Length: 483
Image (cartoon, rainbow, N blue to C red; front, side):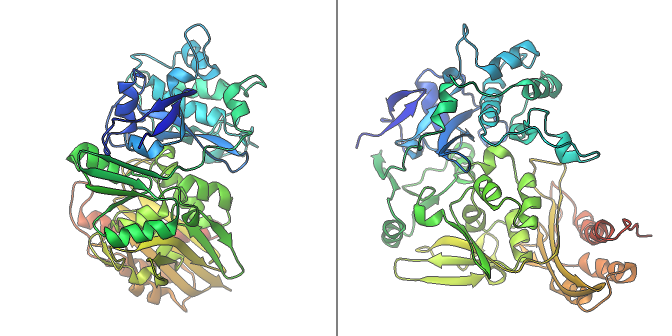
């Protein structure tokens, strides 16, 4: 079947790309060489482009994504803008002009990717000048024009340095009434297109409904299921993985709902992390702490909680938080659904109770939420890094007594785990220095930490204990300092 995407305003046939051909390679074959490969893993942003997606504030929002990770056929019927589509040498886009005038480009290799990520933030409809709060790091990372520097967290520059790039970001104004890409936000984005594409004996299918997807999965339980492709895309690029049958589910309406009832919050498994963050608007504080530490904005713009749980990775940042929130997953097959507590979901290294013919439909968080929460990610970089240890706390503290404690851990065992012994050591005890010191010793010995290139087992154990001590310091007034 003939499949097309709109690139810089022009309908462009996608054939004859192979099912695994990345959007990056496809665009370069079209002569759009501003899109570059730097890492092929979604870590450098040199391949960043814009895609029209359903908006939270306006019908359409321009979202920056890593073109190196997504297969080109996944963009069937969709609308893409590259750096070449933003401006011309004689008529620079405002973002391009600020980058040039403020010295934001040197060798230029990374510049088109920076420009695209910056343009997505430039066009964000709810970008507003922040209210400055003294000592607030988050506000320090937001410019006077409302530009959130985290929009560039997935873009790396190896020679220019970040100050002039930051200066350019903080200097851009607002889109004018004549700006075509700004006007485009007022109309709906392209609808997902049901796609069935074959090449070299391999098949790529985007079903129209969840029911169809589940029927196909029953017929082909060996299918590679793809949502944001942030994990599979790396396997394709770095390890040469070639799936015989790819089932893409990221745009299925049944997987993209977000509902808040009196006793629970249901998060659609195919909602991107950015969409969840913006649609919740801080409703779940522990998730609000997680999102800025989860990879980069470029990754969060396509990554999903369903995918994070589907891989069953022991170092995923989502599971510890969801374990602390006592979340469950709703699993669906072609006949029925079942709900599984996350504590019962993981069965081994990258294994779970999900059967090959099942999909995660939603992640369910019970209400009311615990009042005291925190997420501590120990990594070599403050942002955009893989955890050495991740710890999520959810405590009910009444009248100075811990009534209930839930602690989720990542990076210390073959699966994400709950720190049951530490929870028991805290329950019913006064929330004071003596309790915390004792419980921190218990927490140091939870899981089965290993030595690897990220950290030693001894370091991981030490960080577990320090994490609880840090929580105590953060939750006592004035801030406690343990001896």
